[in-house]
Image 1 (cartoon, rainbow, N blue to C red):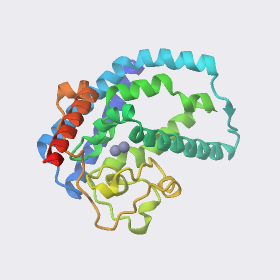
Image 2 (cartoon, rainbow, N blue to C red):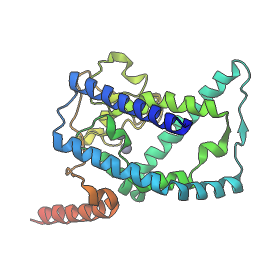
Image 3 (cartoon, rainbow, N blue to C red):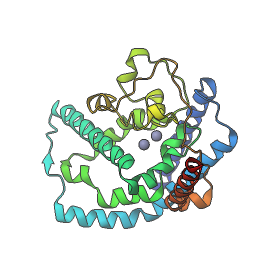
Image 4 (cartoon, protein in one colour):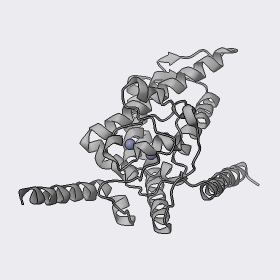
Length: 272
Ligand SMILES: [Zn+2]
Ligand SMILES: [Zn+2]
């Protein structure tokens, strides 16, 4: 069997195994009941966004390559001898977390970015796969124009893979629909309850808990909402939206039109 086919089968099995494992946990200890229609809408949104991102990845790579050849790659060469490997790994994890936190705050603050990021927040029922639900152009643009980490750090490939694995746990698993009673450790590492506050429909939770890895960043920068033990709010946009295949492709246009329509409605109401 060719090595590429063997690799593809291996990664597909791991992927399906992780999805299957997440479903078992979500059925056993759910935070909230996610109706079948919401779950299917989430899957559809993920398939459209991941498909288009992969289709356009070569274009993003050309742009990122041009920027990298202009700016230069790996400005900072981190030491990797002996225990320095672990020190460098920690530096990259903290730097990536800071970058993700900053970009995420901008996604909420800049209307052009929110028009795309609101697609992620349109999930009314959050499950493991919601973590992969992002508007397709958002990923393409950030890959094409913001190769920040590659420009900043020169690290060996196996360290890059390790960073990917390390981030998988708090970042991707933050969307698990699983009740994990962490008690006072809820502020130690990003987790489903911490991130659920970020997706909350409640006004007091708006623009809180941006962190991908360390909630400490939210605490330091004044965006933390430490949830009470039983605080698991409803999630989604206000008013709620339901995505289908068309608006998964044209989301920002549809989203902005809906916002204008809602603004018109509330103005009409306030005049009466
Ligand atoms: Zn967000
Ligand atoms: Zn999220």
